[in-house]
Amino acid sequence: MPTSIPVVSRFRSFADSRAMVANPVQVLSKYTELFGDTFRFYLGGIKKAIVTTNPSVIQHVLKTNAENYQKSEIQVKRMGHFLGKGLLTTHGEAWRTQRRLIQKGFDRKQLEALSAIMQDSLAESLRDFDREILVGPVDIYPHLMKMTFAMVARSLFGAKLKDEDIDVVSHTICTVQEFIVRQTLQPYLNPWFEASGELRRHEEMRTRADGILMEYIKARRQQAPGHDLLQTLMDARYSDGEGMSDELVLSESMQLLVAGHETSSNGLSWLLYLLSSHPDCLERVRQEFDSVLGDGPLSFSDVSKLEFTTQVIQEGLRLYPPFWMIDRMAVADDHVGDIVIPKGSTVIVFVYGAHHAPRYWESPEEFDPERFIKANEKLRTPFTHLPFGGGPRGCIGGNYAMLQMLMILSDLLRRYDFQLTPGQTIEEQPMVILRPKHGIRMTLVTRVSEGHGAGRSSASEDEVRRPTEPTLSQ
Image 1: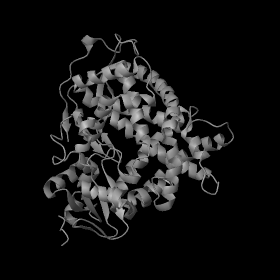
Image 2: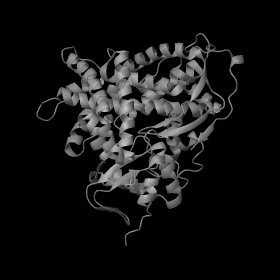
Image 3: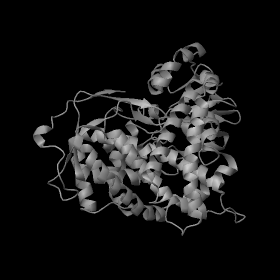
Image 4: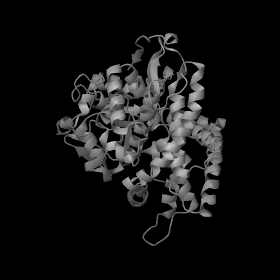
């Protein structure tokens, strides 16, 4: 007999639609606590969805029977409208072909080659960062977002990408993502978005950003080959020997920028918050960087040696997963055990809920990097830790993101001491990515006593007040 899944009524779902826009994690967590690990919900009171934190269901949808689950409307239709057809917005054989071609850009050899571009970008960003922190306490989040996006953009397009062009493309991606979330969570407003000109305004922003990137693509066709991801896209060849058109290179480039835009900056923002609240852990991370790197920069070959720091990042990504949900649509009728999934159903893999489930994590709200020591790896229930998704459509840039976070963290922690500004509220804002809603304000002090990055202090020790523990809204 099929299992009857608890249902949040259409009326109740509609009544929650404003709260879903404000913080969908809070709404879905409330119903997970009330109804268990799998329930039915109506997005915006209109679109039927099955929400789950059950690892057996998640594994079935993302891996075991992944062929039956396509990316849902938010990605194929909404994101496809703004980003074109590419790795994020296609499925089937077209997706498999693109995935095979683009995967080469993230293999070990290419990541080693990209390390130099990434370090140069970071050095340039830190020169600006040093000047900006002199004004006093700063919100670390926008600084990290600027830093990580510049690194992703230059990894893709090389060192010649101008700062002003990076700013335009970054702003466009951020604004369009927010609009896509509104289109999805409040679908009843879509006619108004079209009639009021909101849709057209976002399309014009996208067209301008596309034009900027297309100029770089066309210019590269006339230049000597580079060592960046753009060159990987241009060198890729299909079975008939043909390469990608400029338009497809543009779509894939933009989608790689979107995928890498906020992932690492959000992960790093939450990590600095957690580390500043756990000084013993922070000191242990610094010691590991000193032991492995000395005063030198980090390269891809160093990643495997940074075991404890990797555990810290994994635990940070558990508590604050950048991709707090993954959505899929059932192509045909299916079932997982006794749970029936009808054709056309949207399945929401509630990643945040799975990461915080007491059934799979002891004291899930506590920060404990020891969860991720290698000895515990086989004891962990599969598909309960999904910071980069899972199955064949797991994030193609997961290794790049880990390299990027380790690289930035190694420089920041060796250069600065971080102290949280007292009295602030640290709260999550789940958009496409799980952001800090009010930012994370910190005072940064240059570690003048250290060999790495020694320089002028941004504040004396007497000027820095010990922060009180901030309020954390889960």
